[in-house]
Amino acid sequence: MSGYNLPATMKAMILKKPGCPLQPVSVPLPVPAAEQVLVKVSACGVCRTDLHILDGDLPPVMLPLIPGHEIIGEVVGTGKKVTTLKCGDKIGIPWLAHTCGKCRYCVRGQENLCDHAIFTGYTVNGGYAEYTLAWASHCITLPDIFASKAYAPLLCAGLIGFRSWRLIQTYAENIGIYGFGAAAHIITQIARYQDKSVYAFTKPGDNASKEFALKMGATWSGDSSGAPPVKLDAAIIFAPDGSLVVNALSNLDKGGRVICGGIHMTDIPYFPYQILWQERSISSVANLTREDARLFFDIADQVPVTTSVTYFPLHQANEALTALREGKLTGAAVLLP
Image (cartoon, rainbow, N blue to C red; front, side, top):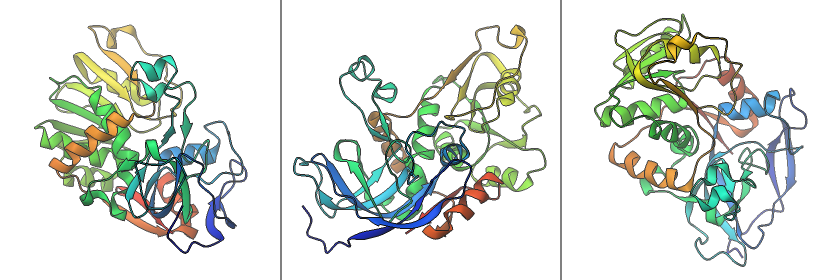
């Protein structure tokens, strides 16, 4: 049901074939199923995962596809079984669109690994549009401070970054971050709030990112091919370059941990066992859970986290994606319908 005067169609940017630019289209307004809500998109962040989908690094699952999974919007319609949300609610829609709640992973609290998970902007349409659908059970009710368009990147860069952060040992003090973009600039603020030191690694010659990292609170910033002034207790890799795993291991102290925070990464090259020995370890991060979201927004409110964003109108989604691909952003890109 809806108390709004809704249009019959909406504007969207659609992927028809991997490797090709998104196409602007007008499509029928979607209708929510019994457990879904219809959301008027106010902002949708542009994520590196979107690039992996567009470039074919992730196998195409649904075509044509409306990408986008860092969505902030307002509920304007509800399915007949929805009781937890109502029209007018400001919500966030993350990458994890729906889980079964019954498989062995869901039962043991690992819904991020659900055998039947559905993903926003990948296996169902996402937020590169004026409206989108979402399962009410997996929407995130946002604190008022984070309900504005500037905070769209929190719905993935923030959540995946925070899940990566949670895998670091609690005693870790010196943390390396490889790839200083949307996720890194958010997590660095949490690190500083917890009195941790961040050592930021950027592409050689990328002085803008080095300066941005220091501005956001990093203790040190330097080239990803180099070494920091101290041994690291842990490292998070957000860049999709497998060779950085070897670099990060080489910079770890004994017992240190490397967290690979991306959904896609190039192959990790051969490395000698010696740099893994002494109980160093490597772990990947997959998706997120609703518990991650609850904990993240609690601490983000305490910090409070801010974002550095560049806005693009919806019809310039391709330009935003190009800026991300070419490393021309400091922070994140956000599309405005």
